[in-house]
Length: 345
Image (cartoon, rainbow, N blue to C red; front, top):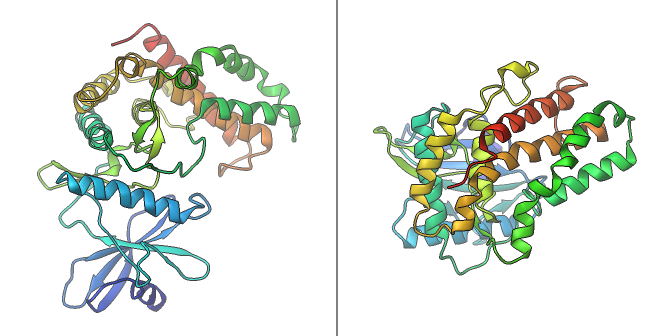
């Protein structure tokens, strides 16, 4: 661990670093607990930033700094990052990028997706958006076109045109069904071009485990701010429900396991509408059911494009993994479509 201790020493920390230990099982960044001399509790968190995904680290940390500064000015709890000795909010060791933040003591996360926690998540992420709705400083789009369905459909068309590994013929049914709904599912981008739908400061990775709770179950703060950027509120709303309201697995081979859980949907929506009541426009509110359908549709498009391309983006465990994912996401979309298509608020 000497190397990690040396990396931590590049930040403005006055205490003597005693130990650095792995923390959690994050899929994107490597995370460690940092202990200082004289204490058996972690004082800081060290993270290696995955610059394969977040390629503009200056923009990434500038976004996070603007957001956390804005939240602190409003008296909110939020993550606190420490500057490196060159005053940047990250350290580059010649090949990897690192950052250090304060460890939030006596905090816990939950993995369970229940109606209770879905309501809390809806309210908390809604309030997060509300607190940032008056931000004047612009944020960069850290992952361009991340939730742009028109861009994702173009990627699918490009994959079909190239048909690199000869898989188009076997998935023609899904292609037909996807493109049959294209006009309906690209509504958000059209409304934006017409000047009717704004982009907001959104979290873009809304999950129950991206909230820290205290021992009494009260939300301390929203975490994992890497994807905070301008987007439609549909991103925060729809992406949560894509995973939380799915009664099966994202790659469930048994499609009978998959349904769209309306109890989770209603709990999250109730909380979200409470959290966003001060700024949400009628057009955003009335299209929340569309957002809940959009994200399983978009993920189907992404899995299918990767399958047709020969599995170049998502890690797979077996040759048909992306096809199984495609079918599972499409079943979720169909179930959401059947239950939500005629709803509005």
